[in-house]
Amino acid sequence: MDTTTEGRMPAAFIGHGNPMHAIRPNRYTEAWREFGRSVPRPHAILVISAHWYTNATAVTAMPRPRTIHDFYGFPQELYDVSYPAPGLPELAEHVADVASPTWVGCDIDSWGIDHGTWSVLVHAFPDATIPVVQLSLNAFKGFDYHLELGRRLNELRDSGVLVIGSGNVVHNLAAVDKSRPDDAFTWASRFDDAARSVLTSTTPTEVAALDAHPDFGDAHPTPDHYLPLLYVAGMAGEEPMSLLVDGHQAGSVSMAAYTVGLDVTAQSSVTEA
Image (cartoon, rainbow, N blue to C red; front, side, top):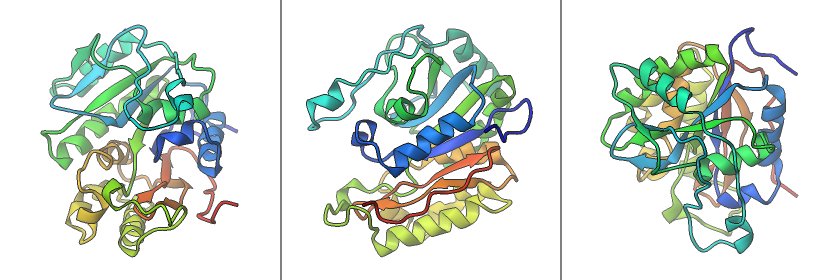
């Protein structure tokens, strides 16, 4: 079902959560799979992942990016996952051009496809044949920088590029409570609700101001998992975003996902069987 504006790809923010989602299907991964079925086949995919949080703004420019297993302590089955999608050096160059005057470096051998990207794409685009490029998050820049860069990159959607931000609206691993597998702390719910109110309004870019929310410090001890949301909100501009799926895990992780340019019916936050 293609419900996008003709000639323009949608964009999405995906709450990726635990890397085990890559190998354990559930209602979140089914929502990602349905998202992949619902969009026109992209010419390429640009992912802004929380897990490439570094000291510069860069884009992967290698023809064959490696699958990065950037975690430890998980079952061998997860380390065996490979997502052999090709890269697209010419898209990397295009990203750098569109971002101007913001400088974007081209990475030819350092990074690849990290789990913030492949744990989602193995469900959304399991054949791994669509070229994938990643954009890093510059840890030295403020929220307005990331929001504005998202605005500039919005024009990529007109050339068949699907843009995905991969992080979490709430992400506090220090507060994880495994006795709450599908539940949220009160502060986590409050912040998730505040973000939803803004994102589904006509001013989704105001999520960049939610660092002033009283629960932001608990929701994000570090900003890396929040920043990808700013890119997609910048692309939305004044267009309300649509909730793709919602829910919480381990008390302190929001699994909410949003789209822009695609009409969806959200899967609710009912507890899984």
